[in-house]
Image (spheres, rainbow, N blue to C red):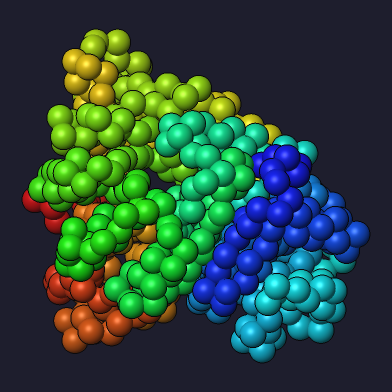
Length: 470
């Protein structure tokens, strides 16, 4: 079975959520068998995800039965959801039972064929979706905006990466991770996969990191490890967790963006002084999450480093001509080879039939340097993506959203700390800030909207971003 679910002790608890739902590994196996009889193989399913038992067990059942799910946030904007449905035409919707009325316009007169674990599976189309035999999962390149550009995964991408990440961390069935990162976000999904593959118990939560409920869960379930993005660690610093008694929480993992040098040092020191492990990791949606990690024993020495490649993987650097740089110490675009490199992209329904386009090699668009010890450091970003609060956001997609909704010429730029939006309508700064914050489900504080008289363009109409940067 997927992630070797059937090999683990049947009675062991696999998943726990905020509603106190607890399912065993046997429960998952049983539900997979039910799925096999109800949902057609090689069908396309849109799964609206929450960090609940229902969402995860539906995901696992899809992967086990050769059904292809697109993982989307359950709070996705209705307009964006509709655009995706129109573009890809799923055969089934799998949505929280309490959200059926919200999505009535999209589910229409579809038949509810299964209701269990707080989720409803709705048959919405009889039209089969032709897909490549290796295609197992779809995720959006920009989960926050619900981008129509999807990443195509094979089953091997997910299982091999889960197994290698588990080796890196030394996970066993005794682990109990607290998982608050969304499962439709590649890092959140990897936390789930890399623990289930060893038979551990995953504690799922949608509670806010700053809430008392969150920490009640951590204490009551005796959670052993935490994975967060830079924004998560900023919150932990404000909460001063170094003053909390967390005897069971032994591993702190970070990914989804870069910590500042001071923050990195602070967490490395905290872990060292309290008998815990601090892992800095790096990955992308296109590499099934993690592709690099910094061994905890190097955290104090290699501040800010993403470390080395995970098992079975290889990191390398490319020069401006796309040739691999062989010098020991060098700087260039970061590339990666490994079995967790996904199949490629899809921008429309017919591209779901494509095979392996990446062929095991991915060029990240990040600029990195390699030191004399072979450790890598991210120093910049080549592509038009940033990571706000750990969520990958397409700047081009945001420009399109603002332009289409508010009819405002705009430029989106920025860093992992803040997105800066330049607009040509001085009186609509608040409108833009409110709109994009709502669309991306992120705080207004990570956006800075500024007025600009004119968008600088070349003769061909291409935006001259460098003139703004200068």
